[in-house]
Amino acid sequence: MKIYNTLTKKKEEFVPIEPGKVRMYVCGPTVYNLIHIGNARPMIFFDTVRRYFEHKNYQVNYVSNFTDVDDKIIKKAQEEGVDSSVISQRYIAECKKDMEGMNIRPATTHPLATQEIDGMIEMISQLIDKGYAYVVEDGTVYFRVRKFAGYGKLSGKNLDDLRSGNRSLLVTGEDQKEDPMDFVLWKPKKEGEPYWESPWCQGRPGWHIECSVMSKKYLGEQIDIHGGGEDLVFPHHENEIAQSEAASGKEFAHYWMHNAFLNIDNKKMSKSLGNFFTVRDISEKYDLQVLRFFMLSAHYRSPLNFSADLMEAAGNGLERIRNAAERLRELEQTGTDGAMTEEQKAAADAFVEKFDAAMDDDFNTADAIAAVFELVRYANTQAAAGMGREYAAYLSKTLVTLCDILGIETEQKEELLDADIEALIEERQAARKAKNFARADEIRNQLAAKGILLEDTREGVKWRKA
Image 1 (cartoon, rainbow, N blue to C red):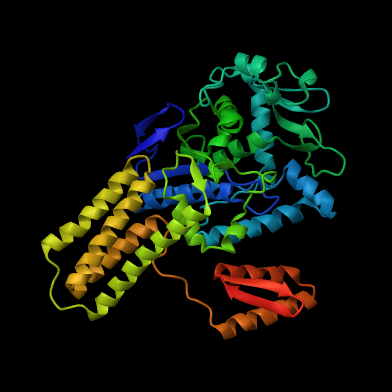
Image 2: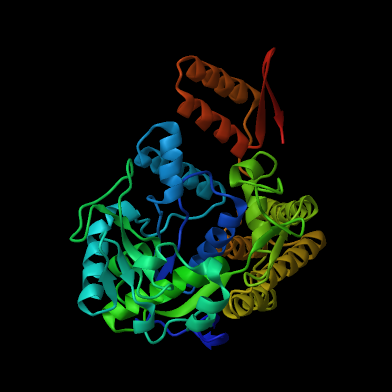
C-alpha cells in the first residue's frame, strides 16, 4: 500500500509503527455552527481510509477531535447570552447527526479540547523547560519557531520569506514576541471569556497545542498518519510538528495526508458569494449518500467541484449500483440451482483485485468506484443471461463488501409511510407549542434525512418528497 506523504512530497510504502495496527489522527471541526460541505470532504475521505485499513485487517485507533473553545464559539455565545459550552455542545450534537447521515462511523475517540487542558499545560511547561517556549509579561506563552530546526519541513515555507513577504501571516502581539513568527501556546483571558488556571495566567490554550496534546494522549508520542484538509498544512500542522517534536524529541507523524479543496460551481465557497452550503442544506435536496458518493468520485488530492449537475450524476450512479444490488438479492431467492464454478468465482474476484489495487495506490477512490461499476455491469450481464442462486449470493456479497468500504449503502433506506409522516408532523407541532424547539428541529431533520421536506405556511404544515 502506497500513501502520498505531504512531508516528503512523494508516494511511500505504508509501514506501520506497530505491525497490524494503525494510529491515525484527523483534525475535526470547530463547533460554532452547522458543518459545511467543505468540512464533509475530509470526514468522508478519512472515514473511508479507516474502513479500508480495517478491510485489510488492521486494528485502527482513529482519533478526531472537536475544537470546543475558540474565538468564534465565544462570539456566538456572547451574541446569544449563553455559556460557550452551550454553543459547542449544541453543534457537536448537530455535527454527529450530519456524520451519521453521511454514514461516517464515530471515531475510536472524539476528544474535546476543553477536557484536555491539564495535558496542554503539561506540554507547554515542558516546552518552556526545554527552551522552546517563553512567557511574556501578561502571561502569554509563545513558541520559539527559530529554536526548532525543522520548522517549515511540511509546508516548505522559509521563515525569512514568511517574515519579509507575508505580513498578513504574522500574528498580533508582535511587540511582545522575540520573533514575529512565534505563535501562541497559551493566552490570557479577556472579559467574559471562559478560562482555566495555569502557572502563567488565567487563560486558555492556543489552537495548535490542542491537537498535539490530544494526539499524544490517545495515540502516543508517535503516530502513523495525521490527516486533514490542505488548508491546515500551514500554519496548523506545521506548528503541531514543531510542538510535538520539540517536546518528545521524536518524529511526530510518519505520514501526512491532506485532501484538496472543494469548490462550488468552479468558485471558492464563501458566504459573501452566496454559495456557502451546510451539510444540512444539502440533506434537504439530496440523500446524503449521494453527497458521500460524489465526494469519493474524485481522488482526494484533486480539487473537487460541487454542482447540481455533478450531484445529479452521482445520484444516478448510486442508483445504478443499488438497482444491481437489488437484482442480485432477488436472484439469491429466484435463481437457478447449480454450484458456482471456479471460473465464475475468479471473474468476480478480479473486480475485488482491481478495487484493492486502486485503494492501495494512495486511496484512489475514483478508480475504486470504477471497479465497482465494472462489477455492476458484469453482474447485470450475468443476471440477464440467467444466474444460479449461489453465484448471485457471491456477487451480492462482493458488491456489498466493496460498497461498505466506501461507506456506500446498497439498500435505499426504508421510506416513511404517509401516515408516519403526518404523525411526526403532529408531534413536531406539539413540540413547538410546548416550546421544545430542539425536539421540533430533530423531527424536521429526521424527515429531511428520509427525503421529506417541510414547509410552514399560513394554512399549516405542507410536506413533499425531495
